[in-house]
Amino acid sequence: MNLPLNVAPEAAALASPVVELRQYTLKTGKRDTLIDVFDGKLIEGQEEAGMTIIGQFRDLDRPEMFIWLRGFGGMDARKQALTAFYDGPVWAAHRDAANATMIDSDDVLLLKPAWPGAGFDLSGTQRVAVATGEKPIPNKPLVGIVVIQIHHLRPGAETGFASRFAAEAAPMMKAPGVHLLAAFITEHAENSFPRLPVRASENVFLSVTRFDSAEAHARHEAALAAAPAWQAYWQAAQPDLTKPTETLRLSSTSRSLVGR
Image (cartoon, rainbow, N blue to C red; front, side, top):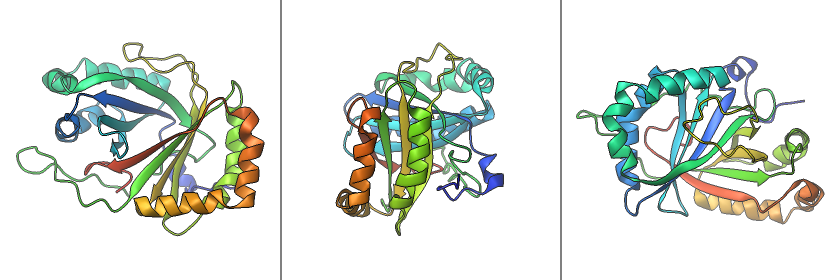
């Protein structure tokens, strides 16, 4: 299968084979407080423990939601990295400040690349440094958005759905200013760190796409919706879908590796 994600073979090896999509519901007005703690205090500690902080985002449609992605070298590596971090000094020093912003942090999907090379290509990316005083550098003006679409599938449908998406849907999505960054399906392995729950009963296919602007995303969606081939593709996919697709429109924080 030709990869639709512009991922070079050597870059594919860099992509995390296990990824968490974490959606946190926060107390009113506390999102920027958490982002200050997360971007300023928690990224390097997690990466030193052996994980990759791929991206962190403000949800443009839900002001109390903080969304982030982190990757691991495998399920055993996930257990080791999470144990090291959550039993370590960085989390001990900042957990109270982080937890004080949260209502719920258990909305977590455990994922794996939908096909070889479908994970994030982070080669060449560089994280913005923390400014003097350990405060995150202020966000640049919003020049692009990341859109995550979560398709809920009947059990066992993920692999076939992913193959059809790669062969049929991804080519139709290509357009100037549109970058399909990654695609994932559910990782059904047993949760290797049960202290942090995951939505174990889910069966999903998930795409991550960057657009040059919110307006570009709206135009792209309208153009696809009007295309007969796109309509036919999704009509054929309906038997695999169990509920409406979730669409997350996201703005990257200043220290996110993807989306800016």
